[in-house]
Image (tube, rainbow over all chains, first blue to last red):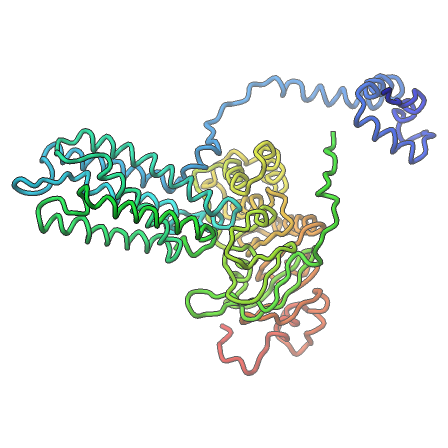
Length: 279
Length: 269
């Protein structure tokens, strides 16, 4: 299909500009609309400007002369924090995750040196004892309004809610789980398998998230730490051996708690898009 | 070349008011109803929200930003119901919000922070650099876009807050005390920006400064103790006051005339 182009007369009149034009208003409108789409006519216009409107050509030349030296100058490279990294970790989370990893490594060190907690034959690895509570601290650091200065803006954006919760929890787990894997593998205390600490770890994380949507993340984290002290630490200290909760028999309960927690988080996905969860 | 107008841009709006609240009640804490039975209809233009401290202005703006859920009543934003417990993702993409306590990450540069907020507001990835540059230029921070936010003065930080609120070209813009910390020249520039934005957006500005309201707002909403006291143009507000009322300008006299309540039990200081 052949497209109709503007005639030479119209293009010359357009190039001459406002003074001395004999184009009507709708002709001006039509030729402008055509020039936006047709490069052949734009080239013809460029040639017409050079001939018909030397003032305009001189102005364009001046602007180019001013711009050329600046275009060739090299741009200083700055250290650029891309959105991609901030989309996974807020600046408030980074020091807390560092602390969590240090605690895991310290627990590993104490295990290797002291051979675990306990007396006599029943020895419990410190890594196993601490594993459930470490990601809870990371989750609290991602959402608590005391630690995150931009909490209100974060709560008001479209991305708040399930998407952001999954992202930040994934980045917390991506930091904590490998540290615990290394700890669990390298510890010299026997009786530590990956399933034994992984399921309680995930169950505590999902419980903190679920409870945080109801009462606020800080209170939820405190409650979960108290439960951990009561269910995991106190019986171990009293009985001087690994409690039922940490043994293989208790894994079914942890699995149930994990499923319940995930279900609540998905059902109440709007909870992290309001201010209540950040308290 | 100029981008073509999309069908969404020239489609007729199916709603009469951008913000419409009927019998709105919003709870703060456990017991206090900060917004108590509010009926409000706001369309395109700049609306100034005036009221004494503790009247519930911040709670109202938070409820309009869907950051607080209303306890009772209905709230419709851009024709969609905004009171429910869902995430309201599509609605929030068209809302811009600047909270009163604007928290930011000190080690981010201006451009990085506005880009992060643009990402959070689900601006399409290819459009983010252009939108950020436009927002930063509109608030007058183009030459300081690569500086860290901890090196900026208070007024400039506020301007970054305004830039992040407009980066997604919102249809509703909610600004809670945006002129706090701006010097007089910046306030003048900010009023011009408000008038530009109010041409096609519904802007709600909560402020204490009556002269901001006089200069920039097309509509004044007076809010006290959780209820609407007055809604009208600034001239109507000025006409409500007489020489016997306290105030240095006609608007201040109108303000004190409407809020003067002999049965009021709480002190005004």
